[in-house]
Length: 298
Image (cartoon, rainbow, N blue to C red):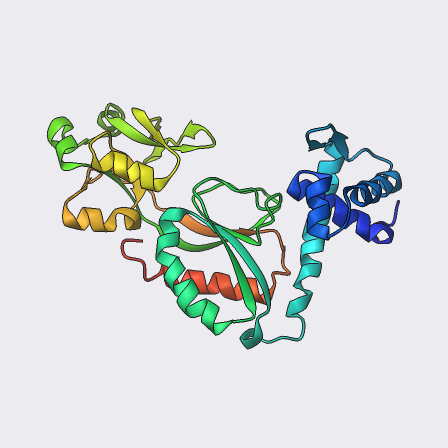
């Protein structure tokens, strides 16, 4: 059994090459040359007696052995990265917090994060990713990912922060034309503005366990686009209630799920630190959980 501690530079070069997609990009990150990165990875391959990458002139792709090694060593390297937390109490948090959050929720959290958290812990650095797509926690080097709904890999740690109320909405003109659905069958006959995840429309799930795949001519991969399509009468849509709270209050959108109970969805934080989550990240997640309770309609 090889001792991987003897090839720490190779492990770091390997992980950075996976995360950045090439030896040259990894070299820039590590402030060395592409040939030095390639040699480090080559020594690691010799040590483990396996090819870790399939190399071409354009890109690197992981072999099955490379993927297995990457999945094993990344959590360990991340735990080493928590060394700036050692011997520091909660009032002196230090280090990077790189997180991803859906844009529809981000608008509720950015002000308290920048106004309150950042000012309370000036030795932390924040790297913010607001996106509705499912980011890859490991490959894209996020510390924590905040998401609504299920999913996530089994080897990641998941913590529920809140329950999110869901609602099916439509514009007043749409309701005047199509009426209010009273069953899942009637709802399934409506045209929808559909939310797309990984290129596929999300099914609509009801509290009683019934599901249907919505049909429609508008597909959106962001909540902002979905809201615009819905408000302009191009279809019904399912939203987090907090995301359309103002529009429902002002009458610009109408709740068409009054006869259809929609299940709530968990608002969760996902990370790969196991039981050794750094203090700065634990405190940040606590902060997000506390502020989630004050979001209107959540």
